[in-house]
Length: 444
Image: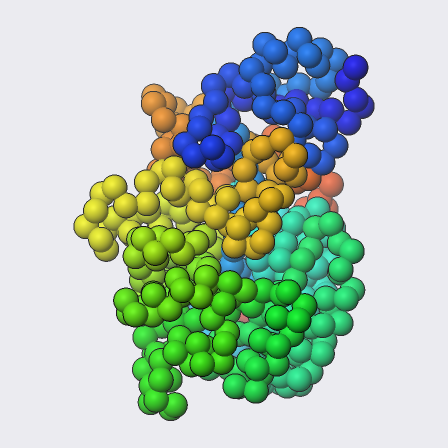
């Protein structure tokens, strides 16, 4: 007998990710409630579940939902505001002054809704977000039925959300308590960087992280300037400092990781550190290159992040992973580097592992949550199709995603978001555009 919560998806291809390299032709995904119940040949599915709604997606590839392991959702409101500038000029002369005048709970709520809409429409079903007012971000993401790790920011400096490091940590822990029963949102400490948090701040973060089993999400070795400034000011490189402070551990989610020496890669491997690779933001800001293949050779988990739309300028995970592959091929001189299957894993199961959710999402297996993305490969630009996973990585973009499910709920239906108030999101964005433009006109 078919349950009233049973639904079936029947595409041309399914790439479950686990087992490695599997590609199923003419199979169906059976969903019961919020979870995957089975993957079966379509004929068998029809015989066993004749009365269940069956969405037939001819010419589509179905994959696990994409997992974006680093971003600043609210900063989508700053997309394009300060392009073609070097990292520290971009931050100190543009982003930070604009944030100082305008960032508020409403800014974060509105910007996060816009980002969630963009991510869903690009096939992303889960993301790591770090920004001010995490309560507002969590509320926006939950309303969009979006899965996320929402970071608890920590900085030495006063801002609209908190006064100092102690205040950041206190408010962050209160936020953690407020979302502990959420089925969609988890949290982690999110110290901004090695140069904006003191040793004392890192000591407290390390203590609470260990006691409460919380991850630490940290910009680290983002630029050459970060490394040279650290050597000038305290005589050691940032990774060495983090090692002395006992921040290097399996709890550390290290973001960017350019300017790495071989001995530092060994430190990361020995301590079980995971890495978020954000190639497009790094290239656009000329921040440097993450040596992904060297990290993978030491069995370091590397997953993909877009960073914020203020520095990217989009949240398109398909485009991001293509950039990762092409950049790796160009910098290593190895055309086999980061092949299409590896890229699919980096944007799905590796991302789930990065966020501690590997047992729940990241692959299409019975018992896992039904976080699912369907990509339409029927357009002439995809033809002929010899390998749909290659077509996904090297040809597709966010605009080719047609349908998305999060926890079994269809949050995008044929490019439409049935439960999102898209008009109010875009109207709020237009209002913020006017305010941000007025402030940016004061910048050098």
